Amino acid sequence: MTLSTDALLSSGDFVHLRAFVAVGQALSFTRAAETLGVTPSALSQVVRAFEDRIGVRLLNRTTRSVSLTEAGETLLHRVAPAVAELSQAVGQVRLYQEQPSGTVRVHVFRSAADLYVQPILPAFRRAYPKVVLDITVDDEVVDTVASGFDVAIRIGEVIERDMIAVPLEPPVRQVPVAAPSYVAERGLPAHPRDLLGHDCIRWRWPGRTQPYRWEFFENGAWFEVEVDGPLIVNSKDMALKAAIDGVGVAFSVERTARHAIADGRLVPMLEAWCEPFPGHHLCFAQQRQMSPALRAFIDTVRQGAAAAD
Image 1: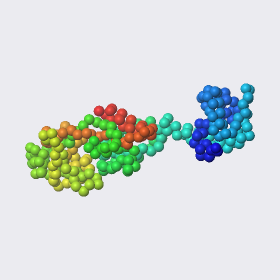
Image 2 (image 1 turned 120 degrees about the vertical axis):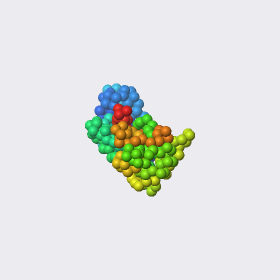
Image 3 (image 1 turned 90 degrees about the vertical axis):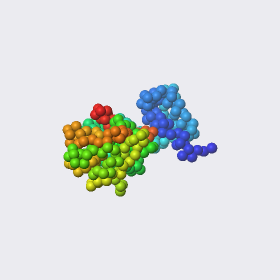
Image 4 (image 1 turned 180 degrees about the vertical axis):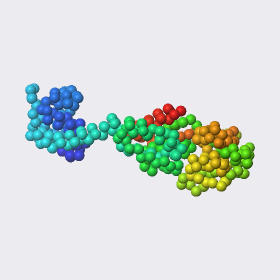
């Protein structure tokens, strides 16, 4: 039975061709074996198996010498450049393991950008000069993979179910805050639903038409309050600054408002109803072999987050 070229290639493969080329160029099993890092006997068996498979003798062997047959010379002339090119290509790909390179596309919530990405940029650049970080800072909840991102940083409640999520911080909580001048004029609410009678600074998720409903915890369950007020923004920083200026009540992550609370510019409210929830996570798709560039970014962000705790 005569084998087709495709069958020969699929059964012979690159290993056998590389072995034959090494011997054909060195005309010595010993020297070729040293080049490939195998034993002469193992190399001889590989070449013999290749000859048996294609049904053609490629080498003349004696106890003292090795020479090419006419068929061997023809094959060596045709395949040696291709084997060299393939070997070089494989070597270049392996460099990705040795020195991370390429582009990492990152989607990061605004609240996380200053905390976890901005601080690591100088050190990351020095450590991985061949990696390009393509960063989108946005609070919109997007499909990470479908939108072309390699990794995202977002809060726990909006993580896609099929993603691997690595926490960067302990659980956090949001609290209503207002300036002392506002509290002096309007008083403190006794219950979250009392906020319906207050001027609240509302925040809207990007891509959504309705403002976010403030979430509180009572009797083992979460509930929402659809507050009202004179200002709607899509920037939590703007909402917090407006609260400091006395515009109304903002709903802020406690950590973000802590300095203004500590120095008396803001007064926290309703803390008994403010339960912690999962904070920022690194999110990425499960993959059999992660690129070294993505691994470098993930490890650097995690190390930076650990150092900041």
